[in-house]
Length: 105
Image 1 (cartoon, rainbow, N blue to C red):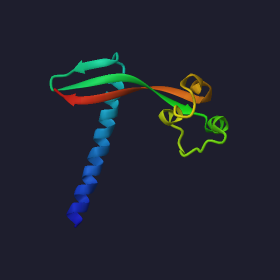
Image 2 (image 1 turned 45 degrees about the vertical axis):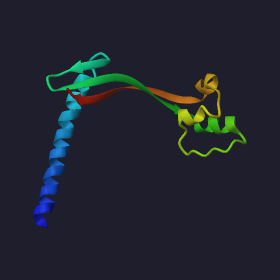
Image 3 (image 1 turned 180 degrees about the vertical axis):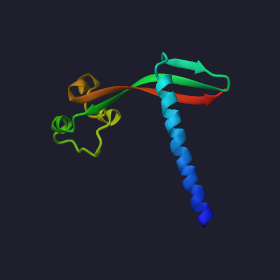
Image 4 (image 1 turned 90 degrees about the horizontal axis):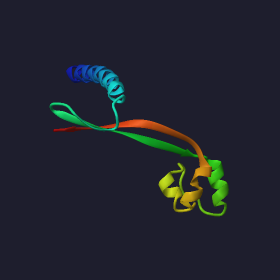
């Protein structure tokens, strides 16, 4: 059992170290233009995505008597109750971020 515990601890340390290395490389890759980029063995697809946070209080007021069945206000669900053209007035914040997907060639 001690051996398994030590193996587990060592793997955990390695994962933390690899995660640090991966994040450093990821920051460098995020500087590339969006699109597909090839290595010798792998490729990445870099895209810019946007995260929108809605103001829960404004949404609750807008829905009034509608049953609000969600704890987290999600745009896809919100579109069922509020017209897409009016969604903008309920946005609390917008964040743009880079997303990297990896695949093997």
